[in-house]
Length: 70
Image (tube, rainbow, N blue to C red):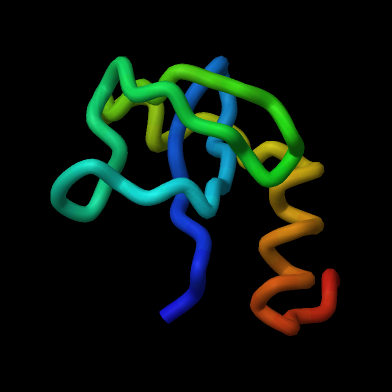
């Protein structure tokens, strides 16, 4: 897979390359450095996963994945 993971935080879905402490997501309250260079606190609630994607993280994720932006 890819070296990044999605993390809802601060009202958006961000991406991070930080190691996840357990499972397949960052637990709520975990401090994470994002690909848009913000330090945020994860919110792993169901509603948070519906937030919009951070545009700066999206650019970096696409670059890392080798996917052109449409």
